[in-house]
Length: 117
Image (cartoon, rainbow, N blue to C red; front, side, top):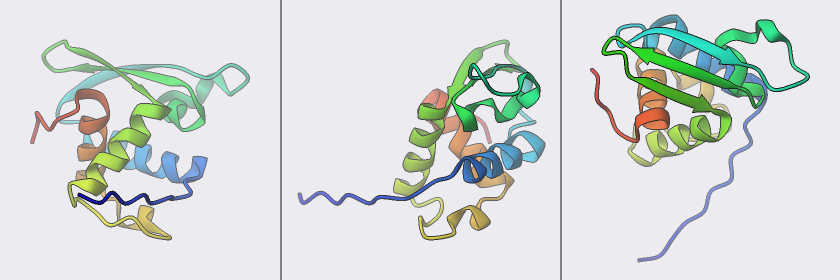
């Protein structure tokens, strides 16, 4: 089977948009809390935006499971959601990311599957 490679430029702002959609609406029904560890040299107040700039967010679920979200895992979640056909990658794909798609991206990023919703 032939393979295809697609290169998509993502800015820190694009990642922040996805994180905002997730944390301000998408994942609130299964995440009861989070703590962040910003990348050294970034603002300690970055909260859930930490993965956009290379930091880490630890998510705690309603079942008290803990997951770690990093920039790499966020990018993996975006790729998986695109491969699964949840949205189309394109020049301005972040405009198509709503809370539901952001939820899918985060679940793929931290659990490698959809467990909630």
